[in-house]
Length: 145
Image (tube, rainbow, N blue to C red; front, top):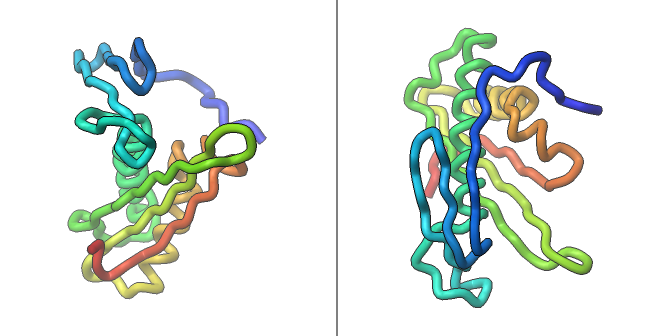
C-alpha cells in the first residue's frame, strides 16, 4: 500500500557530507549540525546522530497528528507530551531500528488516551512511512520518566 500524497505542499531539503562523522545541513531553516556516532556505537559522541534527529522529527509529527485525532474525538490535548525513543541494533547483514512512542495526555483516562494514541498512529505521516518496516510501539502513560 502506498501513502503517496495527492499534492506536495512542502519539501524539506538537506545535504549531508561524511555520514555519521560529517555535517548535515538543512535549507529551511538554514541549520548545520555536526554529525557524530554515539559512544554506544563506538563513536565519540558530542554531535547529532540520525537516530536522535529521527526521534525528534517523529515526535513533532506525532504530536501534530495527535492534535488532529483529538479534534476528531472532541478532546483537549494542549498539555500533552510525546516521548519518542529510536533504538538501533544489528539486523541481518546491517542494522535496523525500532521505535517506542509514549504519549502523556493529562486529564484523560488511560484507556481513552491509549485509543487516541492508536488513532494518532494511523494518521501520523511518519507512522505511515515506517509501517510494515519498523517495529513501533505506542503506549499512553501517566508519567514520561
